[in-house]
Amino acid sequence: MYKLELQNIQKKFSNKNVLDGLNLQVKKGERISILGPSGCGKSTTLSIIAGLIDDFEGKVILDGEDITSKAANKRNIVIVNQENLLFPHMNVYENIAFGLRVRKKSKDEIDKKVKELLSDIGLEGYEKKKVSMISGGEKQRVALARALAVEPEVLLLDEAYSSLDTNLRERMRELTIGLQKKHNTTMILVTHDKEEAILFSDRIAIMLNGKLEQIDYPEEVYTNPKTKAAAKFMVDDNFIEIDGATILIKPEDIDIYKEADVQNDFENDLNKFVKENINLEGKVFSAEVKKVVYSGTKMKYILNVGERTLKVDDFDMNRYEAGDKIGIVVKKTNIYRD
Image (tube, rainbow, N blue to C red):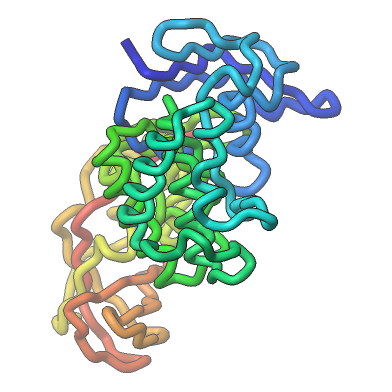
C-alpha cells in the first residue's frame, strides 16, 4: 500500500486545465520531487494534497483512506514554503512548540520534542530568541523543525529553499535529508530547479502543463528522458530536428580529440540513424572550434560539425582555440520520433 495516492486529479482555473488527469503514488518514507516550470501545476498539487483546495475532481488517498473531503486541519499534512511564515510575536521555542500545544501535548512532551529538534537543526540556545532577530537560513531551520514537531504523515516543501543563497540552500537540503531519514518522514518537494531535484530525491516526477511526463529515479530522468518534452525541460542544448525525428546528444556525451582527419559524414550519419537505425555512438567526426568558455570545472565548447552546431562540456579540460580543427566522438544519443 502506498503512503499517498493522487487518483485522476482534475483542476481548472477560469476554464483552463491546471491539472489534467494527474496520477501519483508515493511510498512511505520516500523523498519525491515534483519538478517543472512555473505555472505547470506543482503548487496547486501540494495545495490539493494539504486540503487547501477542495474544488477539484479525483481522489486523495492517505494510508488507504480517502481523505478527499477531509478538512486540512484533520489531515496532519504540513507545508513549508519559501516565506516560512513563522509567528513574529513568538520566540523560536514557541514557534516550534505551537503545533504540539494545539494538539494538547503535555508540557514535558513539548519540552522534550522542542529540545530534540533544536539539537537536530543546530540551534541549541536559541529558545528565547525572537524570530525577527535570526537569519533567513535559521528561520528556515525553525520552520522545518516546527513542521517536523507534529510528526506529519506527509511533509510538503513548496520551493522551500529557493529564496536562500546557494551555500545555504545546499546546507538546508542536507539537513532536510538527514532529518527525513531520522524520522522516516514522507516528503514531497516542489521545485523548478533540476539540480535541487536530482540531489534531493529518491524519485523525480516531471510535470509539464498539468501532466506528469515521467516519474523515475533521478539518474534515469536525466540520462533517459522518456519524451521529447521531458528531454527539452531537462536538457538545454544539442537537439537536432531531422526528418520527423529529434536527436538529443547531451553536451557531456561528446568526447573531444586532437585528430581532425576523419572521413565520417555527420549529416549523412544523422540521416542513417533516423532512417536505418544505424547508431552514431562510437563514431568519430571532424569539427571546428567556434567558441571556448572556461567555467572552472570544465571547458565549454561550441563546435561546427558539418552543417550543425553542437555544444560540448569537456571535463578533461582540453585546451583548444577558436578555429582549431578537432575530432569528436559521440558516446550516447537519445531519439524521439513525432
